[in-house]
Length: 383
Image (cartoon, rainbow, N blue to C red; front, side, top):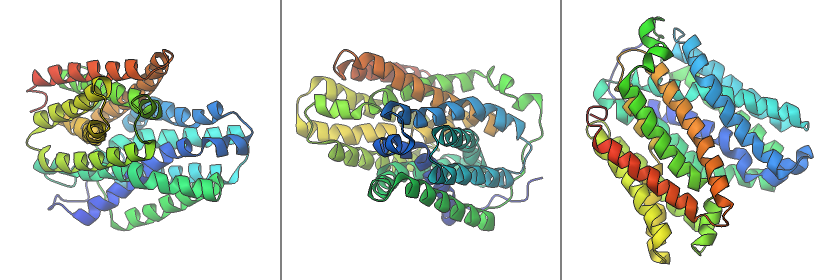
């Protein structure tokens, strides 16, 4: 049974929920900044250390749908508490062990928790507000990922390189526990849905609107993550001043993306979708054809605008395709998102064998143009 009523938009509540996605994105990406340290600590190669990210993503993609389906009737707050405890255990375990397979198992546990968290947190937040504020709710909640990538990740990487990766993971685990306590204190209870045929994953996959959003997710995510995975190669190939400046400008664009999504997504979903895909497309075009450092400064900002609110955009879109089973619908979209990250990074790796990032940039541009064309004709889906 639902124990809460919909009231006006509560900024403190949704900022608290944003802290959840903040810690989730950090839990996912932390190894990327400390691969040499983790490789040395566990006595493995850097390539094996890199698998800590892949193991996490695969677990998220594989387990998200079945867990959300199995827990569809559970109280959202109780499910969230279990997931937060799982995140904390996974991170703290890595902080205390020096055996690779135990750390790998802990990463898989964290990935499983993430697979359930990403779709459920959006549905949880939307249940607290009226339908005309759903997009705003998702935008604020998912802003935690932007802050996490632009501010949190460099800070955690500094902790890992200055002290040790063990301290970094233990610190992350403690932060997660603090957030969990605050969530237990302040978040309302929201009942799950009664299990039925209408909210099963198989029914969702027969929904043309859901399939359309999944297709757009695949195109946009493969395009963006295909090149983002190899951003250091891109920076080198276009003779850009440095990766640090690129990441700062990209972060500025991502923050603008979230702000724009929060302002316009509820009433102009199709325009926001086309605008974001176009912004990333403009960036890819300039990277490929224009040799100007000043233009590339602007391009990294445009790329951030096209990248920052992708999760918000497609999770909002997929929830509009259903009247029941919102968490199931978002779990399908979230799994497609995670699989697309793997497809993008793998395909980008194959294309990089040519010795240049240019083929990856062109792949991204082609996929983004395809997404724009589909979005132009998807007025009903993106209404």
